[in-house]
Image (tube, rainbow, N blue to C red; front, side, top):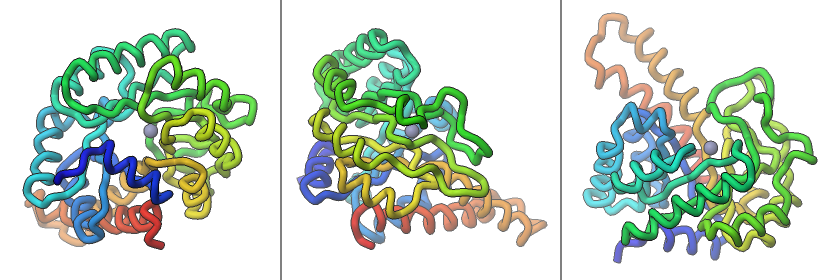
Length: 290
Ligand SMILES: [Zn+2]
């Protein structure tokens, strides 16, 4: 029988591994990621931010993911990543997304709780089993290569999510998954590894929250940190920037190697291959295969 995202999350938690979450903006990204996922036979989540889903089209994204499930029997699920308003969440639920991340990380506490609850109510009323993730603490928004920490992102211990906040937020909202600020930031640094994750805090938050945690912004974090975070209670690991960097590297090389080529599908093959390589390594790491 086909496994739901909820089933796959339960299995990941039981096996102390995680599900990889990769963002896409076009077919070359999905093609590259899907090739590695099929090769390894592991579940995966595909994310589209508000910008990415506007570019692809929400129903197009839903169809692409369904096609992969039906055609190849892949355990692939679609997340409306970093959704900032109830209206955008509603759009994604209506279009058929499997998960919604309502990101109220920058909102005042009461408003974050209220809108997260509103999204859950709407999702439950749809009759489909949609996973809802909430976000506590701001970790910067753009998946880009950066020189410094984004303004307002929590990186001092005093600004990170506390176990008490996590427990209270889950109790008040009823989210299925929680994305805390644990020293992670979106994007990656041009010349250095990301700052270390606060692993003891992840252990405490996971215990207090009682739901699986999601690690955002894992691009640039060390393999050791990612492994330790999974052992500590993280069940979904988001990687985006490293894939974007691979896409650019692939397309740049294709253009340089074939200066007279104008067929997009030929030029995009390089981007898909570069993304497939990055995805494969991350899938192995996140699924406990290395
Ligand atoms: Zn994220």
